[in-house]
Image (cartoon, rainbow, N blue to C red):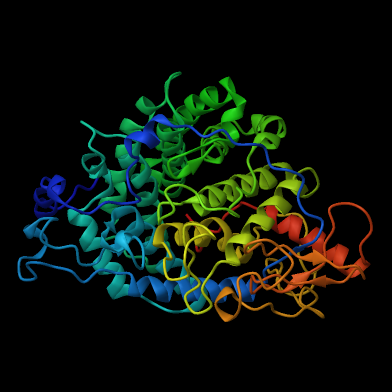
Length: 496
């Protein structure tokens, strides 16, 4: 028999609509009506900065600590417990933005993402945030992701609740993988059922990315859930059927792979197809990715302000999704055919890391936004979609190792990677435009003498090539980086 929510939590959830909290803000009327055309990613840069495992792990530790400061303690009726309802107590939820108007938002999706961050960080850095996680799950008992449609103003389950549940299943899987504690399993089960029941209806021939992206994200999470728990193995086929609808939608107009709407890009349907439909039809994977990966977007320019010029400038979210899709393409195609995708993803990663606070590891909505306006959900994208790529260990099926066979096979800082390279300053330690690159672009720049100098990313710099000749040692590093970027066989201990 499948577990169900506790009675008290269910009663509290029934008044969820009364809450003033909002997760990654629902789409406005204008956003619902606007799909922004994008362009496929250009060829990746020849020279770029690369993170080491140590640097990525350290930044993940900083983000996990920063998220503690973003956890709400607001509770109008502290003695009432969860029965007080969501309007009365928002303690344990994760705040949207560290300053400004967005600071008033306490969000379900942020909270689920952060449970995953704390769980992964405990595995990587040995820092347990069990009390924070317990408080976060208490918040979710009255502000569950599967009721987020009420906040979006829709009459029933919608893109917003399915998107939230895509994070909800991942939060529970990562928490259980770290702790072995199954006391929150019912929440994940309810999210999985919500996706299975409602995602397909979001995908029709007339749907926009606003609906199809969350359906794809939910399908990928649903497949993982079914693959993780034998009792729910049938959900993998359900996820595959949702992925089939997404596949047909995006193939109908391939330009959709690069477009943007709300907080998503066309990389989300791409990723969702790869991680749901293609899991059930693996022989179709390489031909499909070979055909459509070149249509994925790359770095979305952030060099000029947008209107409105405020915290809802979410171009870093678009860039993070494009990075996620490019990493997935690299994994599917392998270290040779997928090299350009891996390099493009690495380039986006370094540009995002360039915007991170030196003490917090967190990033704002775009490089146009102030350093004090870091956003928890976009920082979570950086953590889950980018930094985790750097530290993942390979499985036995992975071809090649970063360090050419010595040391740990899954690391990027395997001895030779940092030889002769110096850490660049982080964005908080000096002017934003300290190099010849525009904005906070962290890509490595080749000077007239052929040497590489770092941007402001805080990454070590390795000179790598996308063609042509590079020194033998650095060429080996490039090959290792491509192999690492191509891997997506995820260990259960670090990723859901």
